[in-house]
Every structure is written in structure tokens, then in C-alpha cells.
Image (cartoon, rainbow, N blue to C red; front, side):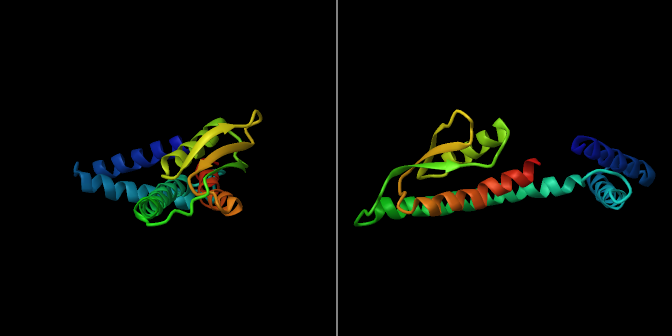
Length: 159
């Protein structure tokens, strides 16, 4: 349904360009904005979820990943450049509520792309992801952080 709404929105933008007799990028953007407002208004009368909600969730996921990536890089710099190392590396079994394989794969990729953690394996039923963490001192906090940030945002973006 999201692709159909985007197609309708682009069609509205093109119609707007024709009505204005202006074939510029700014005219298209204004038409696209009008299309968003029309779809926002029509969602009350039709049985579909507004697609910009999902676009916003995807944007939040990207921003969250950039934030977590930056924080993890700072933590890794502290570990590498610090005088004393109190690291407790370990393997964490993290239960997941994600259902589809591509959601679980996305979570595993986000975990692996964040410095200091890597996804190692999955349980046979895909309900547990095994993660190696450079500093797994408080395993419950690591699990809670991943579930609260990445897992919840992935569920919002892919529902």
C-alpha cells in the first residue's frame, strides 16, 4: 500500500506541475507537498495507513544508527587510547521479538556495523541472536539497549 500511496503522491505532483505550467523541481516539490497533505486528509476516509509514518520511522532508524555508531566509535577510542583496560569481552544471547528473516538480518547487520559488537549466530528458531561484545560487563544492559533502540525502531519501520 505504501508504493501505491507514493505513486498517487507523484501523480498529484505531476498534475500540479501541469496546472501551474511550470516544469521545475520547485514546482514538483510544492506539488508533492500538496499530495502529502491530500493523502493525510484522505486517510481518514480510506482504510490505509499514511505512508509518511513509515518514512519517518525509517528516517528515525537511520538517525539512531548514526548516533549509536558515533557513540560506539567514541567508546572504542577510549578503550584503545586509554591507559588501563577493564574490558570484559563476552558472548551475549539476546532474545528478539522480530519475526521476519529480513528484520532479523537488518538487526544483525546494524549490530555488526556498530564498533565493539558483532553478530555471530542465530538460534534454529531465530528467536535468539548471539552477539560478541568487546565490553560485555553488564549483559542485561547491552540487551536492553539493543532491544530498546534498534529492535523497537526496526519494528516501527517494517510493520
